[in-house]
Structures are given as structure tokens and as C-alpha cells.
Length: 210
Image (cartoon, rainbow, N blue to C red; front, side, top):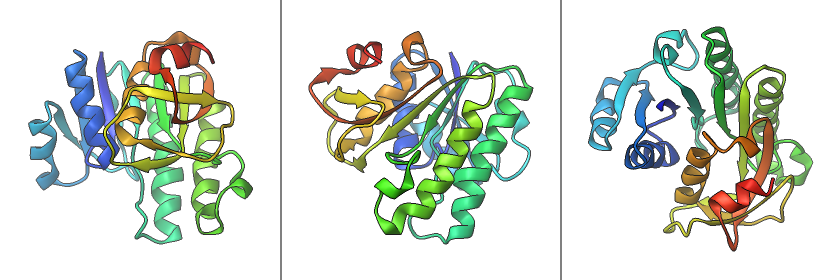
């Protein structure tokens, strides 16, 4: 599959490019800056210059699926969280739907559907993620919304726990990336939203249980 990854220069985005390539897909990494292109190429992807807050149609055209893994980052203010995590995601979703591409994977966050479950300092962020998720659910796309717990840089185990809601916990970014890639073709998670942390079940088996 030809897969566009928005936020390809982020920690999880880079893993997505690498693992998509390893799995035989053709990854396209959407980046905002010219100097970020070399890293995408190094990982085996084709870089595409585009800004989530503007017209991204050229980046999506001709692809088989779109993955949203972008984020404003912890050091930015509330306005950037709204511009990227909510409005940027919705902009990408609209263009995906307009171009007739069916599969959209959203990297969200645990408690995005219920910000009161999250810590006080993350409530605005979770609200924005939740609003983007709600917009995606209102579309005709074959969406999958992945809501991981705390993201770590530990080595992945390919073993996870999933559910509509799960207990607070953490998970390596590597396992989140592999789960999102598996969700591209696992029909049991089309039109599904789930939370995930590290667990004891292999990724494919866990997804089929949803």
C-alpha cells in the first residue's frame, strides 16, 4: 500500500516510516521543512512537503491510506494544540475524504474521549484530540482511532492490551506504530476506537478481539 504519514518527523512517525517500509508498503512522510526530508529518505520513505494547516491535497492524492501521527508537542501553547492536533487533523481528514481515499488511521491519546479521566495539565490537549476523533467518526472513512497510554522509547515487545477503555499504563512507541500498521488491513478494527497499553497478547490477535 502507498501510505502517507502525517507527522513523519516525530518519534512515532519515524518508526511508522521504518516499519511500513520493512513490511513491504510504500511510505510517504509528510514534513513541513526542507531539512526534514533527508531523515525520511534515510528511513526508506519518500518525503512530501506539506503543512497540516494549509492545503494538503497534493500530499494525499493517489495514496491508499493516511496515518495521522502529528502533534504540536509539549512545549507549544494551547493555540498550537488547536491548530495541529484538532484543526490540522480535521483538515487532513477532509482532504482524504474528498479525494476518495477510504482508510484513515488516527493516533489519538488515552482519555481523549473523556478528558476528565486525564491529568489536569493535559485536559485541553485531550479535548482537542477528542474533537478531532469525533469528526473522524462522523465521516464515511474506514477509520481506526488508536488511543495509547503513556508513550515510552523502550524496545517494543509486539504484545499489547486493548479495549474500549483500559487501565492507565504505558506502551513503547514501537508497539503503537506496529499496531497502527496492522490496523491498515485488519478489518476487525475498521470503524473502531480503542485504548491500548503494553500487555500479553500479540498485536494481530489483540486487534482481532475487538
